[in-house]
Length: 210
Ligand code: HEC
Image 1 (tube, helix red, strand yellow):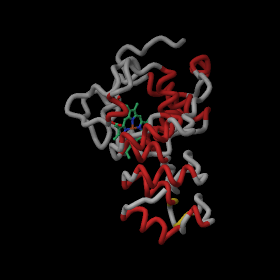
Image 2 (cartoon, helix red, strand yellow; image 1 turned 45 degrees about the vertical axis):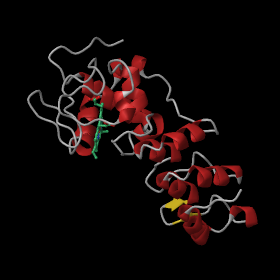
Image 3 (tube, protein in one colour; image 1 turned 180 degrees about the vertical axis):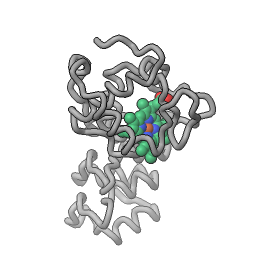
Image 4 (cartoon, protein in one colour; image 1 turned 60 degrees about the vertical axis):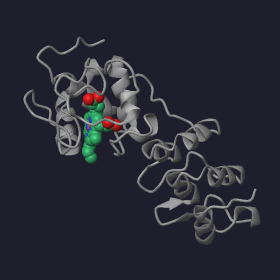
């Protein structure tokens, strides 16, 4: 394929030409050629790299996948191409039945140290970088007034159930590509269960446990 694009020229000068034997998955600093091509929105570059064997699920050093970057940057065609070429969206195992025995205090401590910088959890508090999380369990997704949400979150229908929170918090950029909450999430199940059990208490009338 002949690609007439400045992105391709610069990708080749940094990473080499895949058709001439350069490893399509080699990295420079934080990212690889596919991440750069995706962010630049060059679909032909993305195709050439994937056809040469680039891993469509490769993460940047800070955990961003090609699909997350494409959606975050609004590169729709690139996102569709990646989705039809092997992207895997992880789905954590269900946790609802573990909430009853969770350690709510540990969840509170976790929230205070990891989430509270971006999220208010008191009824009267406004939004910070992220929306207020008072009463978030059972609340419509992406529904806090005046908050500017990503298309990724706006497009996810329904209220926040325990299992939806489980999926989201497992790794927002992995399970909900394009999300503005670009944090690693809470991959450890026990920590996640404790956290969700604590989030349940942020309400005048907590939703019953399953
Ligand atoms: C660096 C800032 C930041 C940190 C840290 C952060 N968040 Fe977020 N959070 C956001 C942003 C921004 C959004 C909006 C995402 C979007 O629109 O895509 C969000 C959205 C959410 C939502 C969806 C709320 C709604 O109104 O639909 C939940 C739930 C949430 N965060 C929980 C958490 C939890 C729990 C933690 C700690 C593990 C956390 N966040 C850490 C910035 C952050």
